[in-house]
Length: 117
Ligand SMILES: [Zn+2]
Ligand SMILES: [Zn+2]
Image 1 (tube, rainbow, N blue to C red):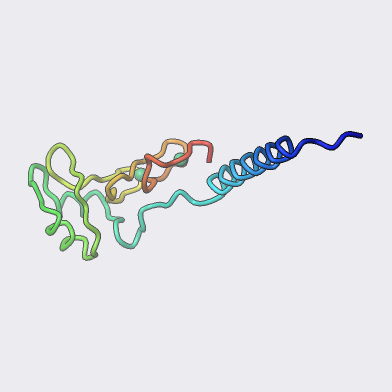
Image 2 (cartoon, rainbow, N blue to C red; image 1 turned 90 degrees about the vertical axis):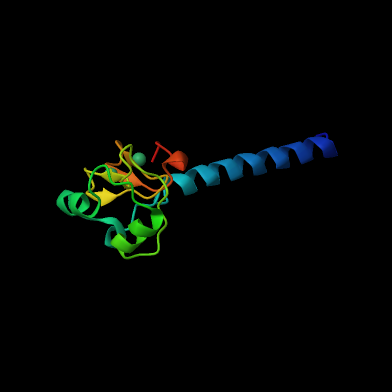
């Protein structure tokens, strides 16, 4: 039986390693939590949200931080200047968070959320 040339063995090892790393990354993504806004920091009823952030009032990041009582900086706003709010989760949405219709929860960094999970 002929022995495979060194280059062929190297290619097989490289290919196997790359496929293994790809599968490992996929499963690590599928089985890890995508991250949700912490309820102790952002959860509030719609009534509280409307009281703290009345419609049409353009609030600064500093005011939002004071109202929420935590050190999170929220830059993104709704069209009327208020911090973004998810009515399904009853929670303020941090920047880059969006409600996922598959998971039925808000997801931090939705732009990196895998819909396979
Ligand atoms: Zn999801
Ligand atoms: Zn939500």
